[in-house]
Image 1 (cartoon, rainbow, N blue to C red):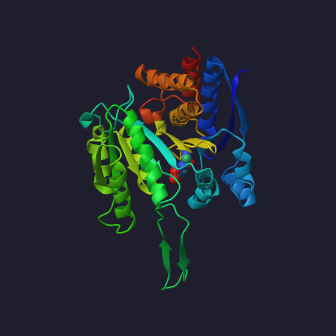
Image 2: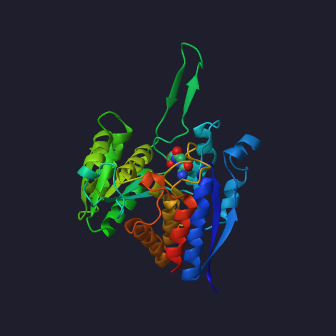
Image 3: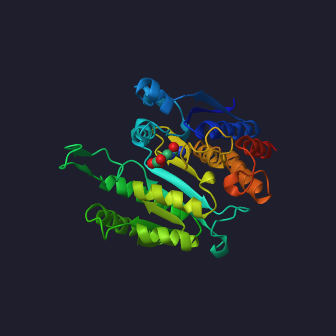
Amino acid sequence: MARKHRIAVIPGDGIGKETTPEGLRVLDAAARRFGFELELTHYGWSCETYAQTGKMMPDDGLEQLRAHDSVFLGAVGWPGVPDNVSLWGLLIPMRRDFDQYISLRPCRLMPGVRSPLADRMPEDIDFVVVRENTEGEYSSSGGRMFRGTEREFVTQESVFTRQGCDRVMKYAFELAMKRPRKKLTSATKSNGITFTMPFWDERFAEMAKGYPDIKTDQFHVDILCAHFVQHPDWFDVVVASNLFGDILSDLGPAVAGSIGIAPSANINPERNHPSMFEPVHGSAPDIAGKGIANPIAQIWSGALMLEHLGEAEAAAAVTQAIESLLAEGGPRTRDLGGNAGTVDVGKALAEVVAR
Ligand code: GGG
């Protein structure tokens, strides 16, 4: 009997509705070639759902998703719906309830892709941002008082737990152990932030004692951003808090060519709950509906999902197809200097995977 994986598909908003079908086209080609089955259940949850019902997903939405092995998500966000509603109504409940405490965001300068800083850019950009994904600056702790008056004030607390820091750092150290350069960088800001970040640094130093073979360094996040632009080849694995990791994992791919190719995996390493795979980019309302969005970030996220599901050969075939399409001058979308459409790129990649 063919291996079967149950996948919840949530295209979401904007270009997510265009990139997700291309992701599925390529995943289908991989499933046929490598002899497994993907049982897909489609959920139309989005900002449109919110406009109709006042909720991004039904009350039992997480329970419905729990029946699946993985979630394949496009993007969330649409003008008219506050961004915090779309994020906290769908994406963040999944990350938290399913304890997807690792957000893995690889960043590579792909063959055939020109960095916007190409004249000054080293060729060997290949690092992974490991973002803490369930706590930190993304907290619901805070408040707002005296709205609209002279006395108005707002607070937002960051929450860093010892367990939360240790488990993301452990994952990052273990990942660095598996990579040839064996290097781990920590993103901090302990000069300006006086409680949480010094604690983050302490936990990092403590964890490092267990990994004497790993070269470690740490940078304040502001200069780290500058180094990402000027010396992206310095980095191997970068561990960061929720907010810093979100920012760094947009900056890295932008330097390496385009955020349109950047994938991400929201992982529950213990596999007690479904993991979720989504492109780093958002719903891009400015180009939505035009058929010009780059589907590679979605398709590469699909490859990360296959790897997580134990389909390593199929995952490698998808990433190799992306590499060869880019290296050999196959169809490419505008963000990469071409004029191909979303569907053209999806079809071309599905064809290569099917071979
Ligand atoms: N593809 C995921 C998506 O829609 N991202 C929008 C976004 O703003 N995400 C912020 C986050 O990942 O925390």
